[in-house]
Length: 463
Ligand code: TYD
Ligand code: MG
Image (cartoon, rainbow, N blue to C red; front, side):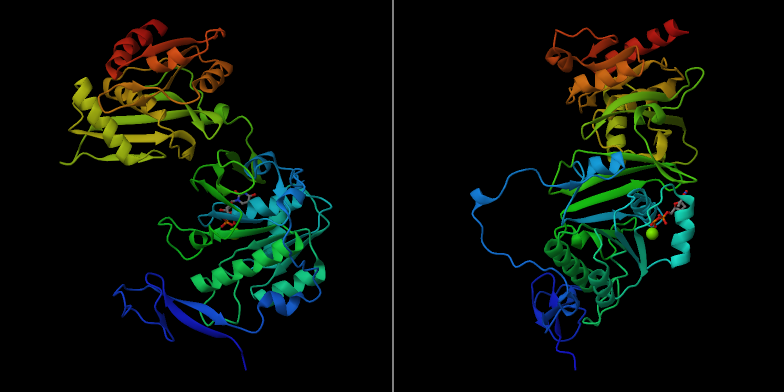
């Protein structure tokens, strides 16, 4: 007889019920009941843990704790190392979230293969051993200490961990792990929480880093990663457009480093390749300037990135004009269109506007505004922007160009890549250090119209 007792609790008001109910009688909310363990004899970890070197913790004086930096495992993957804050911390729990098919399994398998000599256990509940083998053959690297376990039961996973004592554990995916202690299906919130909680205890007690792979769907709702975010040490998000080759990894939370980092990969036929020079690959090289293209000097976290914004403005075929964008916030696009209309006298009311950030990358830096506005203008009026010109500035509601943070870093990146002219906010220019001579012409602008007055002249000159 199982000694486990579970009950259902309302996520909204905490009311308890022995059975699942659709509508909470106490707060009248629908679909809020989830199953939780309220009493048990031994958890999956405890059942199999007797052989593990579980440490008992005792209070320690803060002053007695050695403050030397955390010992980190350096991963032979620069991008991954960087987003983890300079290596993998022992005993940390890392959640790698992303949409299905984006390349999470590939990323971690590839990492495991590159760490030759490190004993790694890759637990998969999604693929067969043969499938993993086939994938490994496509990837670079060879690790003779890499073990594969196809298992979904938490009890069996812990038994294997006790026997093998690996240095790193990868769980693919946390949605497939389940414990018999709960009645709910694998992938449900109680199962995921229980699995993650047990793996966290294992990780902390044995000082072994554990990677959890978690799926999120487009609407971001599916049971899983979201509820785990507060339990794990680091949350990495793997994103990108499945139809494009570039993938971005960014930390949403990191107890051991900054969340301002960013890693970029390119999906190739032989796995993910690190992209160390993103600005060069994200800008397409044309032979001559094209209409509707403007280059933005953006900053993701602390990494400067030159991004190509492409706009297409055409007469609306249907009554309601279409506005659509990829990689950019639609509300922000609508705001920019309104500014163009109201402050610069642009008639865009009967036009379709499409906007695209090249490479399938999503950027939230407000400094993109100026480039987006110029790309729209360039497409609407058929004026090509000179190829070696770039932009960095936020557009305010009155059409003013506002300063952006860390402008020197952006200018330095543009200069390094051979741009000859850069439009920036007048206020940014004031703050720039006088002691440096830039090898790039800085054009300070206060209002959006000013840019539009200068641009046609510049484009004629360049022809
Ligand atoms: P996968 O790691 O299975 O995604 P996830 O675990 O996030 O669901 O990767 C899926 C995609 O990656 C698949 O559509 C094919 C592509 N891929 C390559 O392009 N090259 C490769 O070398 C590998 C292994 C995968
Ligand atoms: Mg997978």
